[in-house]
Length: 480
Image 1 (cartoon, one colour):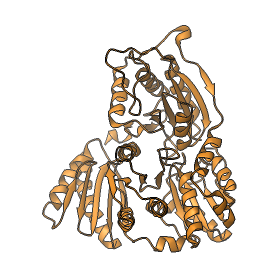
Image 2 (cartoon, rainbow, N blue to C red; image 1 turned 90 degrees about the horizontal axis):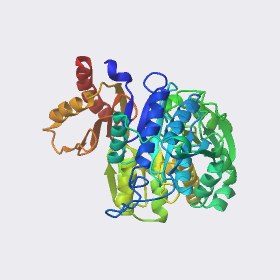
Image 3 (tube, rainbow, N blue to C red; image 1 turned 135 degrees about the vertical axis):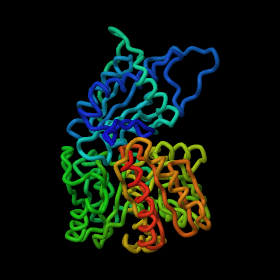
Image 4 (cartoon, rainbow, N blue to C red; image 1 turned 180 degrees about the horizontal axis):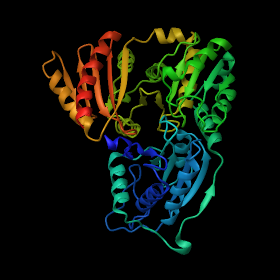
């Protein structure tokens, strides 16, 4: 199992342990690889949301520009500087955004009309990790094909490096928070929310949301109790916003008699909610609550991934609309959302995607939607949650050598092959839908782990499904 600590390269970007699997020279070369893609001989690289060049035409355009931001991890400057150097060595101009959220960086990539964007973050991964996420001009992550091209370019070591005055230059932009808040407020009833004078507790985990989040909530008329509010990157607890890590938030909501508690991850693209009783609601409810709010005002198709709770299907069915599902990974959900003209989407990890603001997961959008939902209905959050059909979704993860998840999926399929009513989907690992439940096994895009999910009306039923797959996984991993 020596390859468990390997560099992860996927549609979600590049992630690894700084100084071990993700070294500055690797970050530099990935900057050069992306710069090479953007300075191809036929002009700036035509990413998915750009028009292709007519046959035979050679573009003569100004050199491309990339927006570059980072979260608060202490080694963020090291990786950011290496990526910036790689980009500039290939003749790409870099606009540094400073410490910003991932949705903020995505928004500015579009606002500044850049050829692409980069955000240095490892999201919810533990402190030793960092990562590099590459963006299309719209702010969306790279498609699977583009991510594959980037990896092949990096592996080839053949980069379009420049000399002398042909190298790129670096400038700075400090407008990200202002523009992000403006975008969120554009889809919210600011006056209505402000009239409620909500008391809100926020845990920003000393991450990129520390500055912009209280600014937004203040402009929405909220009284903010801010936990872990210094953008130091020295995380006060494990960074993944799951129940065991958020006991302090739950206690603070009760102590301050707040209307709601919000938890962000380090790059502030995911949102987890605690109700007014201090009860952890769970990351799956973030998307469900926001979908219920959106469908009160607009009707249209929704997009999510194959590992998201059936709650969103029940909410959509009640509104008479369709839910479409993609493989896991934000870029896959957004690609589906755009292709099928969905009005809203997201992932069950607390990721809300409102394309009218920015087509990526955005915790600030989620906060505004939930506050407005509470305002519109006039009910506390616990009552809004109680109106959503209830399931138990059990999630577990195991260290995973390369390729082991595929073997586990094959053996799981064989185990369930004769189950009555079972249907199989292998678009993303393996998902098996049963008459009243489902399970999924897949390799993570961002960590060297295998994820096993199961959802059912009763906890014991979901846990039993997970246990069956986990037993298979243990055998495969032990033999690896």
